[in-house]
Length: 75
Length: 258
Ligand SMILES: Cc1ncc(C[n+]2csc(CCOP(=O)(O)OP(=O)(O)O)c2C)c(N)n1
Ligand code: SF4
Ligand code: SF4
Ligand code: SF4
Ligand SMILES: [Mg+2]
Image (cartoon, rainbow over the protein chains, first blue to last red):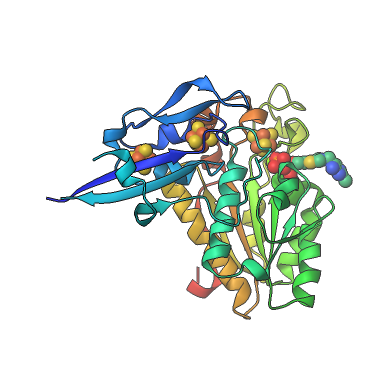
């Protein structure tokens, strides 16, 4: 059966660390970094990347347009 | 499958709209304004109106919206955006003309302009960001502030005996014959954001079909700085407190006899 696999890219310098993407992810992929970016914010990272289904919820709720989402099918 | 094999142009499903530029937005972390900006940019791109859209920015936190979305903009004096939109749409009827206004801008200083533009049935869309507070100036009480809600100018909570009741201005506007589409939405979840996008699309389409009538999309929003909560907590607080006072859904849709 084909399986859906997703992945995201976070614009770490644009991220303001609001955590809304972390809350929006249905499969708990995201977490905040320990490091901070140039603005001083912790940024969103894929902590549990295998769980991403490419649903784009994180990107849709991100107020700053930091997240790009990719999705593919694997057989 | 390695991440690098997924991150390929042909697998792209979501990205920031192209006309939302790379300028870093001045909004606080988690502010609803950013999400609403993104939706406006997406809808304008999808409707092919990048060269034919004119937005009118308010006075309020969104005063610099013109720095973030690459379309034509005008800046109005505080509350006067619907008057300016009226002039622009009448002079350039083939353009998409919309205002972007906060609750202080639209429902306090600009109440008269808002009501009269809507009553005249101007073919404009109003994007109304209701966060129940004056965000920009440091969190003072707005007409929309909830009963009992604490702000800088009502530190013990809004007292309706002293300050009157939260102004449900969208409900008032719905009664005007010039009003074609009135809806109240939010952007606190991915599903809510999708609905708001549809509402903005409908309002913008109404502006372009030549049938006339004014359109308003109220977006019940958070202001985590003014409310003094984290963005996450603000969304919860909004669901529990703002939504009962400002219930979501369509209030009027002349085309559907609602
Ligand atoms: C004529 C005039 N009066 C008052 C102000 C001060 N002022 C600036 S923004 C604002 C209200 C902003 O609140 P809102 O419209 O709700 O926008 P928000 O910042 O919450 O998005 C006020 C009263 C002003 N700039 N000009
Ligand atoms: S695309 Fe969906 S599953 Fe993947 S990180 Fe974003 S919200 Fe989570
Ligand atoms: S929603 Fe956007 S700004 Fe907020 S933490 Fe996630 S990536 Fe960063
Ligand atoms: S003060 Fe409130 S409305 Fe203004 S940018 Fe900050 S969170 Fe947004
Ligand atoms: Mg406000």
